[in-house]
Image 1: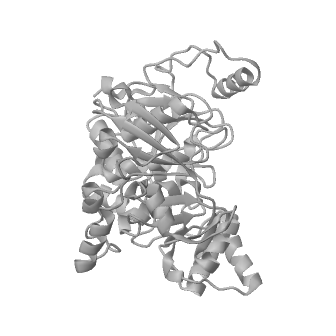
Image 2: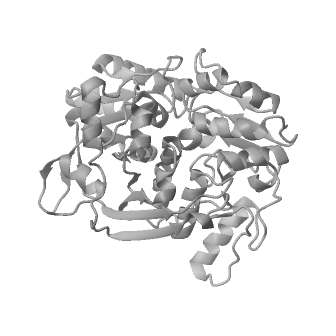
Image 3: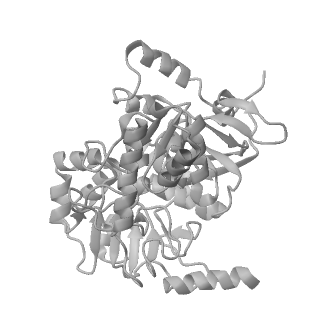
Length: 466
């Protein structure tokens, strides 16, 4: 009997038709849409006189360019307002479920899918957004698609896709104090580079991964894209089932038992072969931070920015260009660098567990005077829990500002931009030039590291100021 990986099992179960020497016609279980990539897709459907084949398999929410203050008022930015209005119109016209601004379950698409129980093991999930890989934490094949593919899924519930190569990244051992899932993934990307998993779908395995909560697993799968992977996934287990049980869209009663029975089969067979494998020791992972302009340019917060020794030609010039943009020099220590903004949020770290960790850390402390601190919950549900648990009071007393749900300062598509030349330590997923605003200088880190930086006003090791 053929030994299959988890990826093989899910993929093979969803192939409608194999095209010789071409892509597979691949069935999609769930399709998430937002205000940025869906309007053109719907417009093209209308031009062709084509409807939405399975509207019940699509869920919408506005998130990328919505404001995070005064969400009950008219959106000031004209383009943003038009995109949100178009999403409403299209969802209403085609009978698609929409979690709109102000509704109980509004939020970032990759946050509300799991918290509602829409995301489930064994599914195929797509969205016009690269960080759809987040949903792979549940043992699902989830990946981002382009606008023309959004149109294809709306019209046919299928997509044309070539099967990716398979990679397994195993992290074994116990994580040290102050080390989080964000540190794990930043460590991995720093080790294999921002292009090290290009062409692969990555399965994360090992005792360190299995020990993580669902929210922590989502952080890891979310950033698979930042090493070039098509997506990432983790085999479902009791942690997964406990998270999903009782959620609004999770199976109930006998259907739940039947679903869990199937979900237990979703694991890589012993002896299954991957195209590439990596093994890492959890004990070697420490709090991480990026220093450059791609997520692979990361170091331990106690480390030094790498020197140019051994670099030649274009590699050296592009490296120095990146450091010049950041205002850093080769060989410098990263600790002690002054910071202007901190941001906790995004589909990477905007969940309640992230906000709890920050609140627990800053309780009884004050942020530094030079820091502007934004906390942006990933959903209305996260915002509600933060209030109910008293976290908002703790954060506000420490000088943090809690804003309303949205993608916020993860990307410069809304009002929450970092000013040119300013430094931001962010829990988001990308540190490209201008990602958080024209000229903004972004350093990626965990919520815990961000909390420590906010208190000290400069880059520091969160383990040293508990």
